[in-house]
Image (cartoon, rainbow, N blue to C red; front, side, top):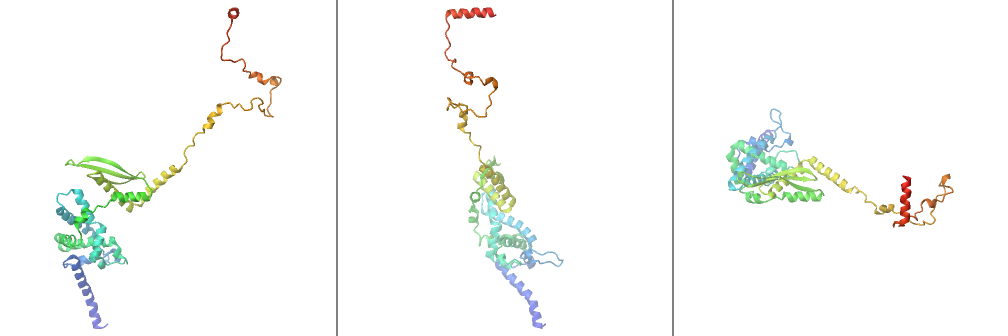
Length: 337
């Protein structure tokens, strides 16, 4: 191997590291002190890299640290930016700013995804990988230069130049509408059940709601109004629909049982014509048909059957007796006794 080739191979890592320094400066706004933290932050587990001891080398630990630091820093910024706002508003705003979707978009806009070491071919479209790398980058900044450096990065680089914190805070995602749209599309029944109606220490009302889909319990939520509580419950339900296949299975199983019951025929209504069977039909009473195989007892062979059912002596009016007949009947009764 020629000497020039050896020199080029030696220079190559230094050249790449210099390029990484330059790229990181464009992204975070300052030069790193210790580049190793940033290299790890940009290493996805799919790369298969290992350290000197043979252990996997990736950004998962830095991601964990960065997630915690990011919550603290963004919470601090939101707290100072929105004075006199309640805890619920501040929590909601912070959640929007540090959501996986928001961090993924920021990573792509900043060009961070182009620096990730990964074996996946579509990393630029993988918001989870990009968002995780952003959190790992925050962890690297914290270890490299401390909490104040993270605060400067987030307040002056991210929230001042790339994110409008006010628009994010007041942009409301209508989770209730999204959930209603899903239930209507899938033809399942949904209801909001109130769980609690209380007051906080300052006397402000607090409501708690539970979402039920086909009778299956979904998410719960609390808020200072019924609308806010239902929104929170709807958001948690939507998250469960995305993450828990067994939750969806339970809903459609309940729907199947309900629709099966609805499709079963109801009890047949009674036939009113049958109620008239107690009425004796008077058709052809003069010459009723007698079955040919009807056997007549010998005692009745010479008897006129119609005599047994002669009703001519039955009358509604009582028969009037003469005075003599009444006396005779009384004497006869006396002698019999």
